[in-house]
Length: 145
View (cartoon, rainbow, N blue to C red):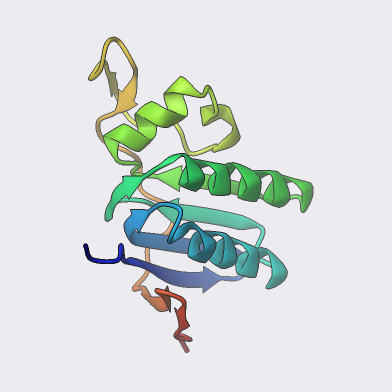
């Protein structure tokens, strides 16, 4: 069985960062998610947008990492927002009533995909878009200029 892969791409602009996660978020890869989010805070970033478009799977350990990062970011006077959550991740957020902590939810028109649950169909994009370069990949650091 192949080891799940997760890549993290980061682009900073002042005190704001766009993190794009690509791959699977689970017990094996969640330390990379935590590290990436904590590095933003330690580097003075106070607004973190997390693009989940290329995420193929996210379990409750991933949700826990996002909730913890939201607490830390709020305590530092900032905000964390999730963008483009996959339908099952949006369902998990809905079931746990934690969307209010991840300020980017909900996005766009809502439709009932699973037993009346509301999940975004067309999520909003982060407030700014810029080319991204790998920041972290499977625990290997790659710095961008």
